[in-house]
Length: 211
Figure 1: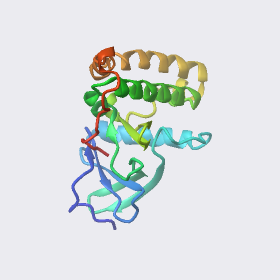
Figure 2 (figure 1 turned 120 degrees about the vertical axis):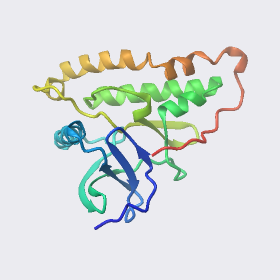
Figure 3 (figure 1 turned 180 degrees about the horizontal axis):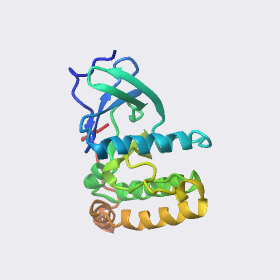
Figure 4 (figure 1 turned 90 degrees about the horizontal axis):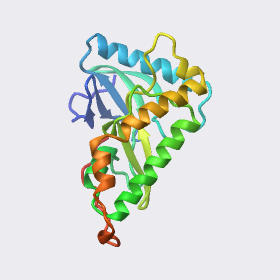
């Protein structure tokens, strides 16, 4: 039995809360705290998709790996990689990073992270329900490089999961989701606020961390 009730959650979503794994600093434990039908349906869908990914995926840099379940004092726990920066601090969300972008350097770093994310999803045929900046973490692997990690809404809910099995359907769905994703207000604002007069200014310091 793993005891989590004395911990403060690292993050809270619509149906799940995320806790640090007390026995493994590289892992986190997600608990369903809002166990209505949609919450249970969400975790079942995600685990089915992880089982699918386990058959072929070699590069897990863009999504957390899943390691099975554990029993906790808050109920069944689902164990995943914890996403932290190179210095050990929890990685901020893409929305938090975008909200703090002020200068050309920041916008350039954001654009490069978005390119990395798009390429990763395309090359590895990763299907998501939606793409939202608040569901993507910016893992800083150095002072100047970010690897985006999609942490929620992974998989698809259709009766016949064509995008999971067909690269053509997958890429079509990715294109639709990406177009909507790039219209998110946080990204539009971050990519549009930096002008030439700000070149050479100091980059943003990330101070708001979320696991």
